[in-house]
Amino acid sequence: MECRRAVVVLASIGLVGCGFHRAELLPSGDGNTITEDEVVASRATTAFEVIQKLRGNFLSNRGATSFYDTSSPYPTVYIDGMRYGDIVILRSIPAEVVSTIRLYRAWEATTHYGTGNMGGVIAITTRQGGDQAAAYRH
Image 1 (cartoon, rainbow, N blue to C red):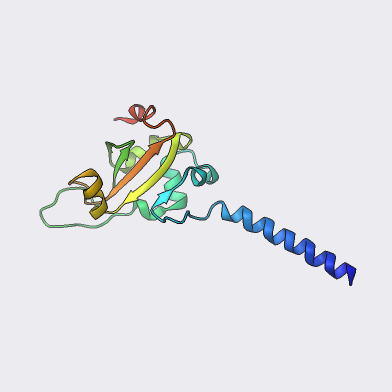
Image 2 (cartoon, helix red, strand yellow):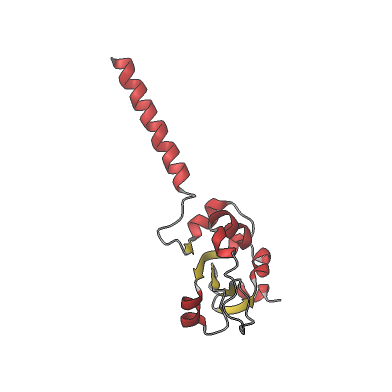
């Protein structure tokens, strides 16, 4: 009887320990935001890798929005509120400077960043709050 209790206790500890380890890679409550804790837990080296590992859907093509619109069907990247270009720039942003990454869908992007972002916006906030942003202009 005592042996069975010890096995149950040890098994419970093992399950709880595994549960906490796996939880660090689970998305935050907001599916459109990647937090600093998630960035660190991903062990990625660039912002692109962080997104690819945790929210691959951020990088998807939104499709043509109209016959006349020439804007990209992919999200536009903004760093600390400044427009930086297309998603290729994400490969040059070290994950270690990223505080949050947020996806704004097209209708949200228009409200926050104006027109011309029909593919949406990937908004990155750096840990230094803008000090690092100038380094990623192309």
